[in-house]
Image 1 (tube, rainbow, N blue to C red):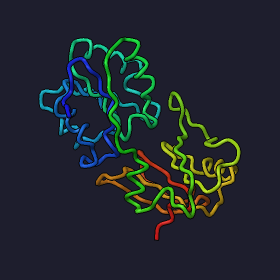
Image 2: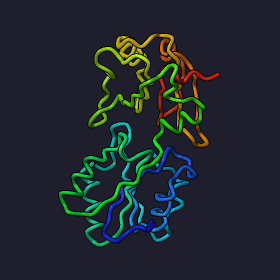
Image 3: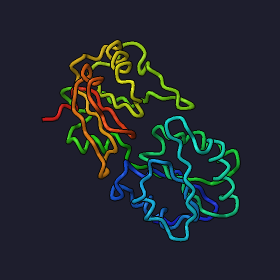
Image 4: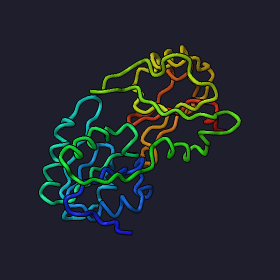
Length: 241
């Protein structure tokens, strides 16, 4: 299989949850052969160290609603370099199709007639589940898996994570939960999630700075989860011995 980056092509690729050895072989090969790399803030230095020494690396991260570059600016960089015949690796943490604004970039590339490929990566939810040795779809307690975020466009926090009754027998994985744990807890309990439901709060998953806090939904506001990037897993399936 041809894994090297092709001239004039943009690759929307997942860098996985943080650990370099959780990159896919495809993403690793693209890192070593791409002319231009546009990484998000959450892509670790250890992963970027795998890039070709000749690659031009332009960080394009947006954190906590304070972007260094606009989304339109990212589109412009992709189109500029691919239009010059360079191979472009747009490197996103986790999987590019999970809360990664990939659809906006796909639309921009299609409109400009730039060839592109999507390279999946390991999303943080699955890496955290493996770290906890907990199945997110345990057949005795969770027949559904819900991936959600507390943020929407422009980094705006939405306290209403789920409208109406939350599906029973589900595991909820909450990306970018913010730090208003009291408001978040109230919203989730109003949706019908029991106060004693187990919660795993995992900060900087799979990295040397990883922090894991096990608690319950009602006690979440009184716990001290680590810094962003933070992931919350909520449900009976993530009960850890």
